[in-house]
Image 1 (tube, helix red, strand yellow):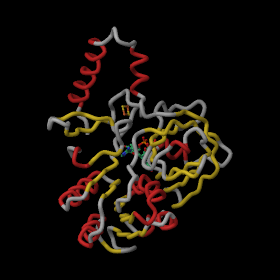
Image 2 (image 1 turned 90 degrees about the horizontal axis):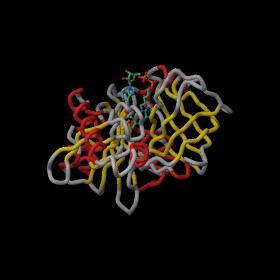
Image 3 (image 1 turned 180 degrees about the vertical axis):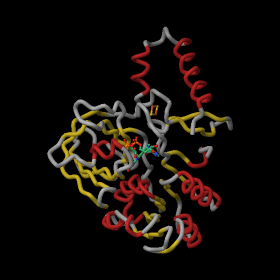
Amino acid sequence: MLTMTAYNGILKDIKNTYNNTKNEAPPAERMEKMDINIKNKQKALVLSSDELIPGTLYSLTLRAPDIAPLTLPGQLVHIAVGGEDSAFSLRRPFSVAYTDGDVLCVRYNVVGEGTRWLSGVRAGDVLDLLGPVGNGWDVSGTDKILLCGGGTGIYSLLGASKRLGARAKALLGFRSSPLVNSTGDFERFGSAVSVITDDGTSGRKGFVTELLENEIKNGGWDRVFICGPHNMMKNAAETAMKAGLTVYVSLEEHMGCGIGACMACVCKMVRGDGGEEYRRVCVDGPVFNASEVIW
Ligand SMILES: Cc1cc2nc3c(=O)[nH]c(=O)nc-3n(C[C@H](O)[C@H](O)[C@H](O)COP(=O)(O)OP(=O)(O)OC[C@H]3O[C@@H](n4cnc5c(N)ncnc54)[C@H](O)[C@@H]3O)c2cc1C
Ligand code: FES
């Protein structure tokens, strides 16, 4: 979490940078250059909105021909909520769960007013979408990859599973059996799945880091992709790094602009020379090498 002092410091740095370089390019153009990873904004047709867990979890499929074909596993879309005369000024960020040609799928929990509004959209409605945003998972090569996810973090990993198939195994943690979802999608994409729940009502009882420890002991894995709650990611990343695996995490931070300009989403990282720096989760991430993250 960024403190107000740190935030003010960052804003001062940005202002100084502009002041020092104001003859190079006007601010608008420089702001545009910040949007390095954002490809498109478009009106996307809602194909379906399915309630996976009543009142809680929804799966949205959208026809977005300018965005879906460009989207890499783990990238984000920002959805405008509230309709035409919306009182919500900020878009809401979501991982793209997977794409299929012109179609993309987003799965989300209803947690506040924006997602509640979203849960009311129906097939045939149109949503204002920005994306793809951010970097995504590196699924190239032949490495065997463990996908370690918890809560809504599993959706970021689903697209990786679609590309990796049997090269990946998904280790998925949920609080309790009624919340277990999307496991069949990982299997449909060819990845093996292990489930663990906090209360033992589905799969083993415990935390997903225990599944990870076991898989690492069994051996045969090169990399680990992790997405989920902060502490789970920290513990899982430390476990896997200690075992010598290459580890990537997809960070989740509250976002403002979502396009690299406001610095609301920054996280502290280790710089190449060993110092520290802030990086923006929205456009520099959300995926980072775990060895660079200062938790
Ligand atoms: C990189 C990224 C990827 C995401 N992917 C998904 C996804 O695939 N599926 C999904 O269900 N959600 C995802 N989220 C979270 C989603 O963006 C928020 O749940 C949503 O913006 C909430 O909007 P709201 O208007 O309903 O809630 P708000 O009224 O804005 O907030 C309601 C409550 O949720 C909390 N909240 C809002 N945003 C976040 C956040 N980013 N992290 C933690 N708590 C938050 C607020 O503090 C508040 O307590 C992602 C967020 C980020 C940053
Ligand atoms: S949300 Fe504004 S810079 Fe990331």
